[in-house]
Length: 219
Image (tube, rainbow, N blue to C red; front, side):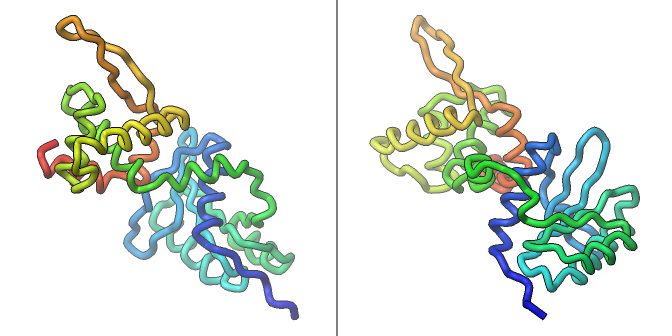
C-alpha cells in the first residue's frame, strides 16, 4: 500500500484559516476544551465548526478522536478533518462518525490570503498598540505607537526608528488592517490610525497576549 503523503501542518492550517474566512467564518482563538484542544474553532451565523488539521493522512484516526471529544464537550458542533489526501476508506469511516473530511486540493485560496494569516509578530504588536490606544480613548498616532512599542516590548529604541514604525503602518494600511483618519488639534493636522474589523478579528485570534502586555505596562 502506498504511504500517504505528508505536508507541513502549519502551512495547511494557514490555508484552512484563509479558506474558512473566505466562506464567511469568524475564526476564534484556539478553543481550550476539558478533554481536547482542537486546531481551529470557527463560527458563522450561529453554526459552530471544530476543525482538526493533520499533516499526515495516516493519522486520521487520532484526528477523528479529537473531534469526537470536542463534539462531546461542545454539543451542537460541526466537525471537520482536514488532511493532505483523503481515501475512500477515510471517507467511509468519517461518514459513519458524522465527520466531514476535506482534502488539501479542495481548498481554493490565493496565496495573498494565506499570507495574511502569517502576519509578523512586529505587525501584530503594532496592531495591539493601536487597540490599546482606542480602548483607552486615546489617539493612536505614530509617536504614541512608537512609544508603546518601546516601553512594552523594548522595540524601536531610538527615535530614528520612527521610520520603521511608519513602514509597518503603511503596509498594514495596504493590507486593510488599519485606516487613516486626520484630526486637527491646536491648529495642526495629525494622522490617527484606526483598526478595521479585519484587524480586530486577527488580534482576537493571535494577538491578545500582546494586548495584555501593553495593558500591564500601562499603555
